[in-house]
Image 1 (cartoon, rainbow, N blue to C red):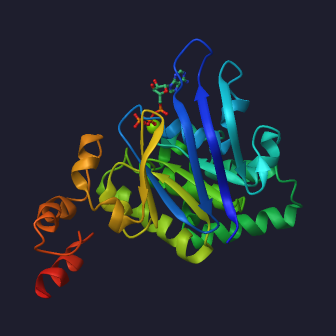
Image 2: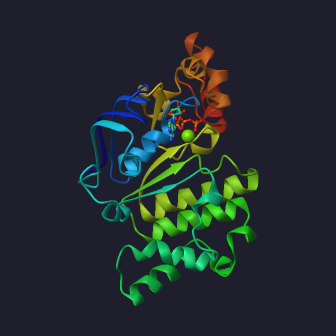
Image 3: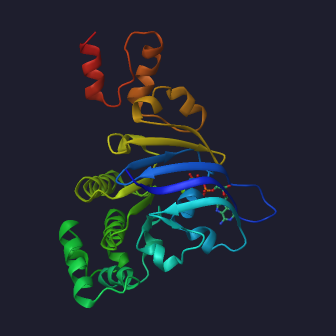
Length: 280
Ligand SMILES: Nc1ncnc2c1ncn2[C@@H]1O[C@H](COP(=O)(O)OP(=O)(O)OP(=O)(O)O)[C@@H](O)[C@H]1O
Ligand SMILES: [Mg+2]
């Protein structure tokens, strides 16, 4: 299958006289795949997403980049930001900062403007996402009249309307209460299953992304230290803890049992744990 994102030996620093924040990152994301990046604070996760989104190097002339990032066939270094906007979109942790216009409706319409769609096509896309994401009743509101979860839902819907190949989500639920969190994660699941968009998610709360991501990567000090499918990735929960990542509870309980040969693998959720224990 074609790759949606190709990161090759990527190095980045925010200024020429400071340390490299990314140190030789390689990452390939296949079309339609969901990849989750985890790592301690300051590891470079947001920086990596910003490179894929092409905010870096374009919006940061003081920095230095080595290596390459190709998104949907376009090299981010040599492609104009407006052209990339149709290929890749990013949802930030801070929902508030993502709104440019007072009303939700104007904000969503603004996102489509770069694409030079005709009026009919633009309003059709807005109609479809309102329906698909159940945000019709929010259209007349201002950002201040939305809950945190609603803000994130509107941001994600607005990016999906642009129909990008790749959607980047940087801790989209970290500022939300449990209800807001589940609202947003339900939406992300919907995007994945119904629309098949390629997703790269940075998330601390791994319980939320288990079952969603096909592959996990551990980034620490600008390097990818571990990469694999969930079964392998969480098979050694102590390694993750050593690198500031809190693995799913169930993997912490079962990790030692696997080591002692009492169960064959680390389960990733409670129902799998039950099955494993019953089959003994
Ligand atoms: N605009 C900037 N200018 C200079 N240094 C920066 C800038 N943004 C981030 N950094 C530095 O780059 C490093 C990586 O930051 P980054 O935000 O990518 O980490 P992160 O893994 O996303 O952390 P967190 O989990 O806290 O969000 C940190 O040392 C940070 O201080
Ligand atoms: Mg970050």
